[in-house]
Length: 274
Image 1 (spheres, helix red, strand yellow):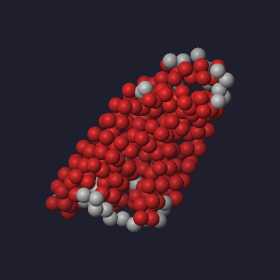
Image 2 (cartoon, helix red, strand yellow):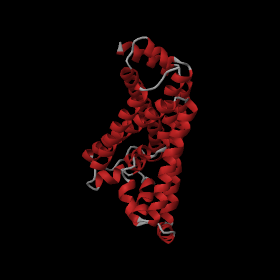
Image 3 (tube, one colour):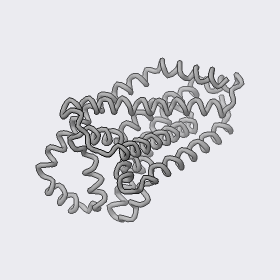
Image 4 (tube, one colour):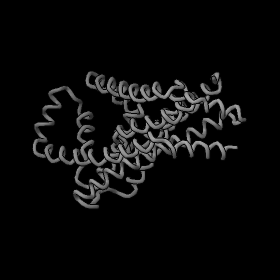
């Protein structure tokens, strides 16, 4: 029965216009951002000392300055790949597709049909989660492909980085993307609405991240807390892995995934489907 349920979800995704549009946007945005990062790196190299002084005068902590500079990649392919993976913009693009994919099930009444046909709620939820993770990874892949094409066209395939470090970092990103997908699925099952799910998935993470950034300027001790906020952890994955704190992204991903799946399932099990 699980196979037929997943086949049905696969057919829905294949027909999804929002998925196709968002994948195209992700690809184009990846290429554009790579070009913009390259321009920023060239300009920053000419005035690095002035930029650092200005950020310090504005009250930014040393760690905040270092993280801000790490966002701008150097002229090698792996640096651009890492920057693309650390860019939370791609997560928000995937949030739209997942919100439409799950939320539309409620608006069209198909979620009730699946349950009434004998599928357990656990299997319905699991199928939505599996394909939502697939949507997330496919969106990231399109964004990454656009970035890589632009980067290779600018300076070739030259890359700097240890193979074992690269595999560790990529594994951390994979776990984080799966965790973020589970959060979006949880939100969609909770709100039961395409529009509300998308809005909540976009606004709340941005709001929390912004609050943590502002608070960190006033109190440097909040950096230790903010790095466990999954959307902040994604942006710091490379530095955490290279500094011997690889447990942070893996632990954060595991906790968020477990809590989101449990919370989403509890909500779905007790929902009245109309």
